[in-house]
Image (cartoon, rainbow, N blue to C red):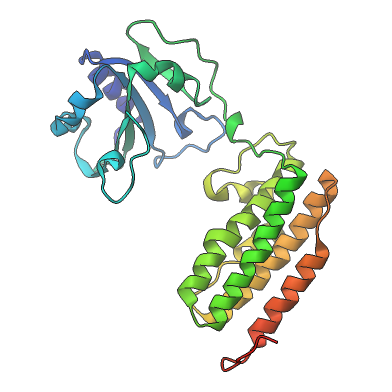
Length: 290
C-alpha cells in the first residue's frame, strides 16, 4: 500500500507535468488534526485547471494514478443529478487500498474555492496567485448551538414522524416503517444528542458525519442506549426500537432544554407516546383507531 507521502508526491508530480493544472490543494480528514488517522482515509485532492473539458474528453489521463479497483464519476452519471456546476470529480479506489477523490475546478473559481472550506491546504501554486489561507481548522463542522425554534422543530419532527412508524408497523409495511424510523426519526435523535455534546464541550467539537464520533463524547450508558435503538428485521423488535428511541430522545431533550433555557413539550411527548402504545395493541382487524 502506497504511503501518504507517495500519494501526495504522485499528485504533485502529475500536476507539475501538466500545464493545464495551475494549483493543487487538499482538504478533508487528512488535513484535520482532530480526526483519528488510519489507512482508510481518502485523499481529497483538488486540481485548479484551465480547461476542465479537456480532461473529461480524455478518460485515460487518470490512469497515471495507478491500478483501480473501481471508479465513480458522479457528474457523468445519469442516476444522480450533477451538483458541482463546472467542476468534475473522479472518485477512485485503488487495488493497493488507497482511495483518491480528485476534483477538477476551473481556475475562474479559485477565490470561491479557497474560501469555502477551512480545512483546505495549498500544496502547489504555480502562478503564486492564490489568496493566503489560514491553518486548517474543522470549526465549520463544530456542533452549532440551536435556537429555541430549532429545538422545538426537532422535537416536533421526532414525535410527528414516530406516528408514521407506528402506522407502518400496524399495516405490516416493515420497509416503510424502518425507513421512517431510520431516515427521519433517527436523525432528530442524533441531532438532539449532538446538541447535548455541544453543551458539554462548549460547542467546540464535531461529532462527524452521521454522528460517528458520538461514542467519544457521551457516557457509556447513553452510548449503549443509543445502540439499543437499532432494530432487527422483525415487527416486534421495530416496535421495541421505536420506544427505546423515544426514551433516549426524551431524556436527552430534557437535558438540552434545561441547559439552554428552552421549553420541552412534555404534554406532546406523553400524548404521542400513549398513541404509539395504543396503536401497538390495536388488533390487525380494527376498523377504527379509537
